[in-house]
Length: 67
Length: 250
Image (cartoon, rainbow over all chains, first blue to last red; front, side, top):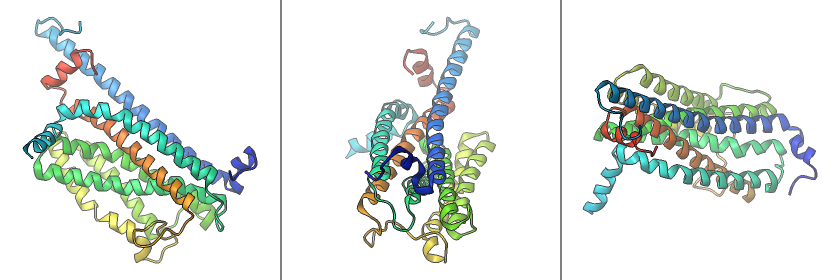
């Protein structure tokens, strides 16, 4: 272990702003990208399902199995 | 032999790759989490203070993996683009498109963490140095690829145009890599090379390599997530998508 205290860890020997600024940017990107991708997938699936249901109705057939 | 060949073609179809990718994603997330935790632990709690740069050097554990992956993802993207051009396989173009945004983000992170490292060590957030400039060009190549594909409505034509851009742009990768050798730059030379033993402490090296592997697994996980959306978007009119989405499974 190279740190004697938590505040020493935060200070990063005076480079705190630079080290934590890098960590924060990386964490932000790596948290946001998968969240946005999961949301894109969910929205897309819901949209296609709505469309399939609508198509089923307009052609006079009952909506497929799910309904 | 025939069997192996058949299997390859089986997974080259979007229809069979979609569920396979869905099954693989959690494994890549798990690997990314374990490797990342190990790498950051070594990097921030085990690796010693640097003699010249104090604790500021610890940015290396994020900067180098981001920079490596920014270049590597571009090469993988160019590879899929080439396969798509040559064999006209549908999935290849989708893979290339799925990789570009992640590559752009990692390039941005490499530039960002580089700026946050350059400021305390060189006294400047940015210099028009060969390494930094060629990495910035890489960012523009990713953005250009994304914009070009977005501007073309027909996916097959978008793939083709994107593929040519990706392949031409690949020339930038060796330029980035060797820039620190070819030009007199402010950026330090390679920390790790195949021809000579690393110029850093073993624990530093291990921390960096584990973080790089974590970034790699992360990239695969998000690229697979994105390719699944792209597959659904492009194949939404097909029978298999209809069947899949009208049954309970996602």
